[in-house]
Amino acid sequence: MIEIKFNSSLAKLSAITLTTIALLGVADRAHAFNVSGTSSGSWEMPVAQDRSGYEWLSNENSGTDNRLTWGIGAPGSFSNYVQYDGVNFNSGLNSLFNLGNLSYRNGSTYSNTTFASDSGKRDADIPLNIAMSLVSPSPITLSFNFLFNILTTPNVTGDPVLDGDRLRFSMAGSTSQTLNYGGIDYTLQLLGFSSDGGNTVFSEFNSPEGTTATASLYGKITGVERPAEPVPEPITLMGSALGLLGLRLASGRRSKNTKVRSQA
Image 1 (spheres, rainbow, N blue to C red):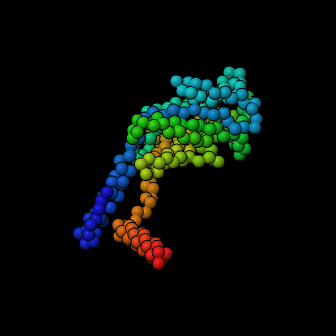
Image 2 (cartoon, helix red, strand yellow; image 1 turned 90 degrees about the vertical axis):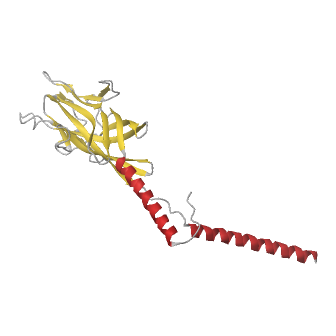
Image 3 (cartoon, rainbow, N blue to C red; image 1 turned 120 degrees about the vertical axis):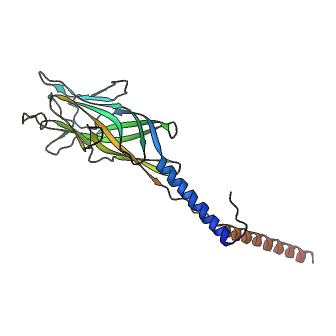
C-alpha cells in the first residue's frame, strides 16, 4: 500500500511515476508471455443427417480418438481417414507455431455422403478438441473446441490433385478461443495448414486422390490487457471518510438533544 501524506508537486510526480512503472510492468508481462507444453487432439463424430458413410473413431500413435475413418474402399483402393497427432510446442506472443500434425488418407470410396460436395452442399461439420497441456507459464491443461469440414470432389479429371479432397475450417465455426491469465486476455487463433514448416500457410489442406498427405496446423496467441477497475483517488477516499464521520457526529448530537428534552 502506498500512502501519500501531503499534496505537493513531488508527491504528484511520484504518483505518476509509480503508475507508469506499473503499466510498463503489465506491458512487459504481456510481451514476455511464453507458452510451452504438449498438444493433443480428439475428433468427434460428424454432425450429419446421413450415416451411410460408416464413420468410426480410433486411437493411433498413443492418441485418444485422434483418427476419424469413413467410407467403404472401392476395389483396389481404401477407406479415408484424417488423423491429428499432438506435438511439443514453445511459443511467444504473436508468434506462429505448430499446434499439431495432420494426416489425411484419401481413397476412392462408396457411401461417402456425410461431408461437403463441390456443388456447395455441406452436410457435416467435424468437431476437433485440441488440448494444450502447459508447463509454462503455469502447469494447466487448456481445452479448445474447433469445427472443421471436408470438401469431397468427384474423381472425374484423372488428376490426383484436382480430384483431391480438402480439409478446411468450417464456414459456420470460429477459429479463435480466448482465455484469461494474470489480467490479460490471450486468444488462440487457428491460421491454417502448412507443409513447409510454416513458411506458407493455407486455409485448406489438399489430399490428392489415392495418397496420404500430411500437413501441420498453425496458430498464434495474442494478448490484450483487460481494463482495470477504476480506483478512487486518496483525496476522494478522504472526503468520503470525513463525510461519513460528519454524519455520525450529527447523528450523535441529535440523539443527545432528544435525550435531554425527554429528561426535561
